[in-house]
Length: 205
Image (cartoon, rainbow, N blue to C red):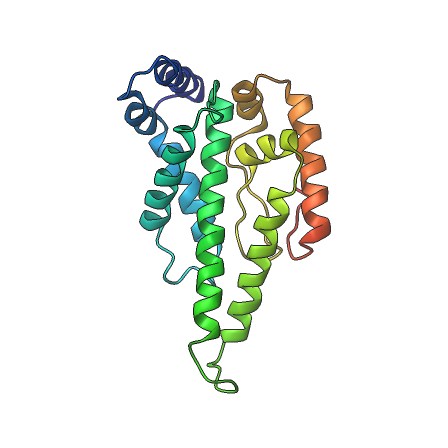
């Protein structure tokens, strides 16, 4: 397995090739970042244990890949660093999951006549609303805080919906080119803002 530092360098080599007009560089970029992107997708989808029926990791990853490719084809979306690319990729994964949740919310609202809800349906609907609220709160973060949170966050549903690291703060600092203290401060501010909107999550860790 490649170290975070070596992956960072390979990602940035690919980004330079893309900027230089190498049409094959995007596929190399996805190959280099594949393990990281799949891990993020698996954690996001897997964490939503009561709402992820019908939400397949492979589908989310494929649709996120298409969104990311489309975004990077635009002249105003040209990540220059590994941090910018990984943040952009994480954002499109979240967009895809949020779209999937909203779509399933609309579909399930029309599935059964009123008053004939099966056991556990209300719990699942409440959980879906919670995750939609979380993803929307995430998008409202200031850009600098969101860039840090993109690299650090992943939630594990269970007692207290506790946060676990996607990257360490040292790894995020290296990828973003800032100090660990700055990462720590931005992560703290992001957690506070999300917690104010999503009280079901324990963001104290």
